[in-house]
Length: 158
Image 1: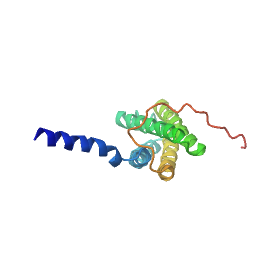
Image 2: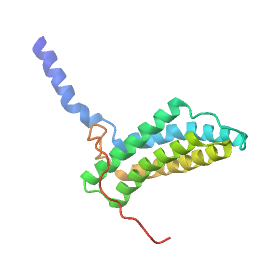
Image 3: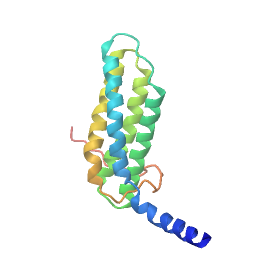
Image 4: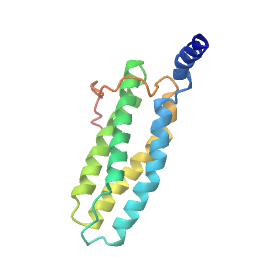
C-alpha cells in the first residue's frame, strides 16, 4: 500500500508543473483583478480633487507590489527564453512603473494628484491584460524570481 501511495505521489509531483498556469497568464489575471481595485481608488480620489487623499489601502499596495514582482519575473523569463526584447522591456517597465505610481499615490497631497497616479496604473494594467497573452506559454510561475537585469534599449525618437 505504501508503495502505491509513493508511486502516485511521485507521479503527481512529476506532472504538476505541466498543469501550472503560465506566468504570463498569472500576470494577466492579476492585472484584471487589480483594474477593478485601482479604478475604484481612482474614482474615490477624483471625488475630492483638492482635499487630502486617503492613504493607499495596505491590501492594494501589497497586491500592486506582487504584480510588480510578477511582471519583473516575466521579463526575466522572456529574456531567458531568448524572447522578443520589446516584450521583455515592456514587462520590466511595468514593474518599475507600478512602483513609481504606487509611491506617487502614497505621497500625493491632493485627491487630484492621487487620481493621476491611479489613472496611470489603470492605463498600465489595461496594457498588461492586452500584452501578456503575446508572451506565450513557456514562462511558468515556478521559474526563477531573479530581477530583470538586462538593459532595455531606450528610444530617443520623441
